[in-house]
Length: 173
Image (cartoon, rainbow, N blue to C red; front, side):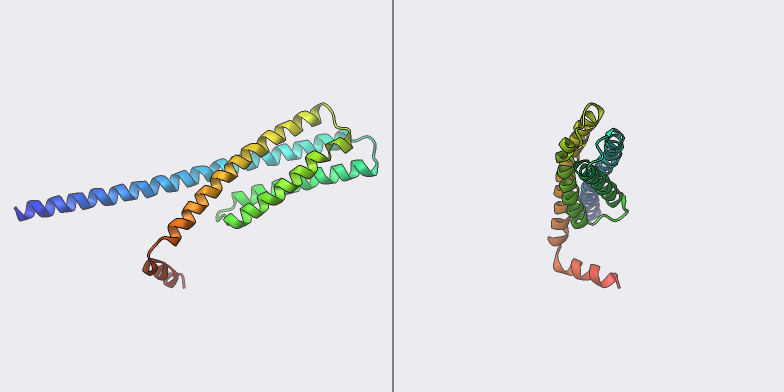
């Protein structure tokens, strides 16, 4: 009878550990999947921003100061999109840096889209700007998901008992 009790307790304990491990694994997979989607959208945005700048530069024909400012704004947006994509593709993502880069990217995007009227842009440039706007919307959705995932990760770290946090710091030396 005693061995049956120990066997039952051991079985329940193993199932409990397996359930917790699988839930942790699912949470990690969900965060990883969000990171992959964020990387894919950032890659798409970098490509679209580069194409928008190239099309606008090819269509520029006035060569005045306003057009130069518009092309500068589009180039700045292209550069910010490339920087954001590289930041997201890094092995260790710093969520605060990513959020800051996203704010800069959004500012550059609004300046670039606002400057299209100075270019007298038409046809292909306008269609590409619409595509860039769609990708920026997708990126904003993915950033909201990324923000929720990083907050959940920070909360999980913050809610751990003090001795596990202390132990984690002592092993890093």
